[in-house]
Length: 166
Image (cartoon, rainbow, N blue to C red; front, side, top):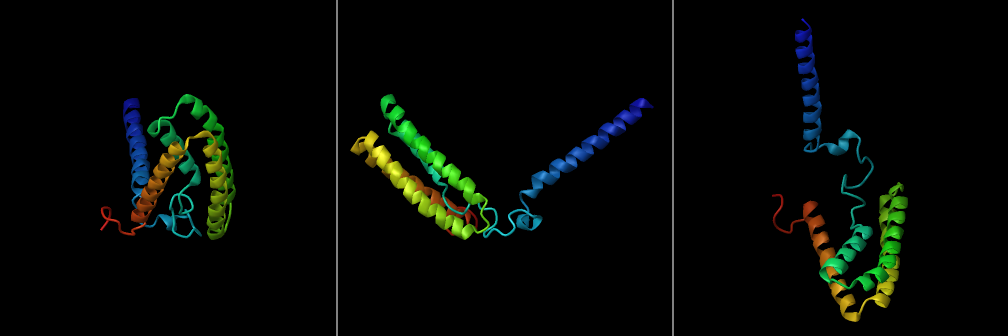
């Protein structure tokens, strides 16, 4: 008798757990995600942030390029690290502040102007540390990465660009 209750209980628990797993696995594929209470009031639905390239990720990518693509020496990396850290911290703080904003349009505009200001400071700081050839190559890599990210975002939004959905 105890075995019967144990087996029935185990089957019931597995059925309930299976239902929840199935529910979560299929909810990502539903076309009505915005109607489920998420991202209400946000133009464009769930677009991963504010519909623009995250400046903090550009700083991160630039560090990766500097370290692994340009392969600058350790002494230069030690000098460049505070510049990268300060820029990244500024962007993260501003992004956190703007995520709380109700007006996404003005938040995006504000972030773009803020990114331009911090970006200039970032470039000026790096010019003091890197050689002209290193700066040129790093800027080329950054522009290439920005173009690629913009193309991916455009394709993701359904803006053509080959491949992807039809």
